[in-house]
Length: 258
Ligand SMILES: [Fe+2]
Ligand SMILES: [Fe+2]
Image (cartoon, rainbow, N blue to C red; front, side):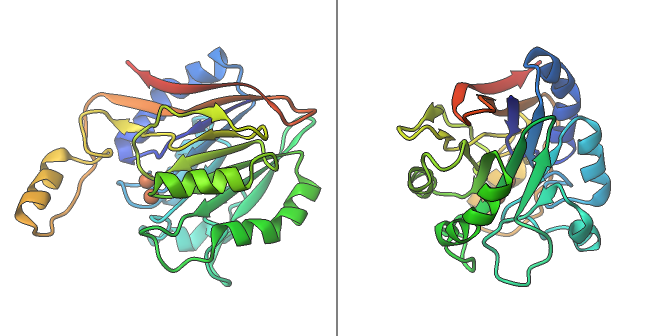
């Protein structure tokens, strides 16, 4: 089974990157499943129903979120009806939406889980504990499990991945918008990368207009960030997963530009 997990899609530029590059990637890599982090896909902040539909139309099967889940109010209108848009599972009880979903392909069921870290991101339940509580239910239904661990700190992502090594097919990090070159298969067999990277404008700071951000860091005054424009890239991780055993036969970092 061939899976592509795309790093944080930032705004219009990010969506353009998906439109430009994903159809070819689906062919070249014979993709069966495309997952993506969509927390910044609407104007850099959150997601809307229209944007989610646009991304599904480009070939994305499932969208994960993160600390920007609630930035655009439109999400409250549709998240409870969306089977394949998931927000962090370790949000407090009663939070709208769902934290994991089951995607049924031809003869394999893939469980996708979204979790959020705690370093610089307060107010959530301990991700490992929440994962552990849900694991019996998810592993009873899913043949293969893939986790988007949305977090700032590299060490927190690595600690989580090592804690679940051998229990899931893959743990991919999102949130930093900077792709790391540490993709590997952990000793227990779980595929891991600290961060999938950015899908958006190349000449930017994390996908946003760089001048505004530089100005803010120098002046220490608040200003409005805008999505950057220009040449775009799509970053992520390709996984070839043996659907019978759940083991990783191949993994490859993806960085697609014009
Ligand atoms: Fe992000
Ligand atoms: Fe984030």
